Length: 229
Image 1 (tube, one colour):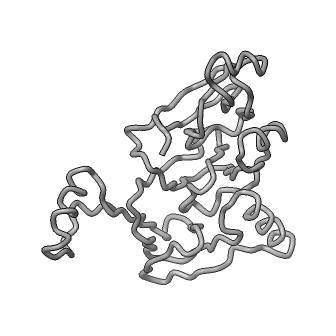
Image 2 (cartoon, rainbow, N blue to C red):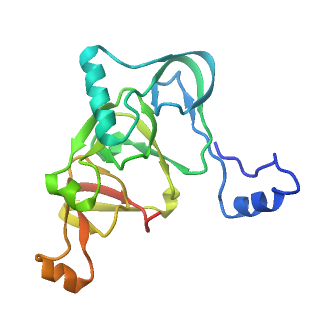
């Protein structure tokens, strides 16, 4: 759901609200139909719900609790993501970011997302912490060693600084993609991901004017932003 224009304004904020609307800076909310499937959301994202909707922790035993706590620590996501069940509607807190809806089934049932983008998903999707292809990836890139991975059939909602129509989708067929910067939003779980020098040697990297690049190898897809936010 997208608010086309801010109406709760006064004479002091009307001008900024008008230009924000003209530049597509608008509040957006995710509306979930719990009748269709149980919904897992980022902790603290719920705004209101209607109908016979119940919130649970989604924890299925001690082992599941330990696994989720570990995954939350290493992927920078909330450790325990509440799960909503029942029949009714679930509405999440408004955001000025763009909401992307990705069908994990269309990504060969395995999708890895960049840290901090997860908003909600079908509870039937399995969550896992995906380790990068090499320990040097985290050390060189200054990023975490793990990303959040989703597997199975279902839809995931991501919060992005870029609208869907502005994003670039690259398909790889036993090939490689090198990106100068963390511009990838999501990529297929079948792809290997490392951080490497842009040249074969330190001298070559210095001569090219580039340093480290994110490298995706294999067969699959990468969804990337046109520029860093």
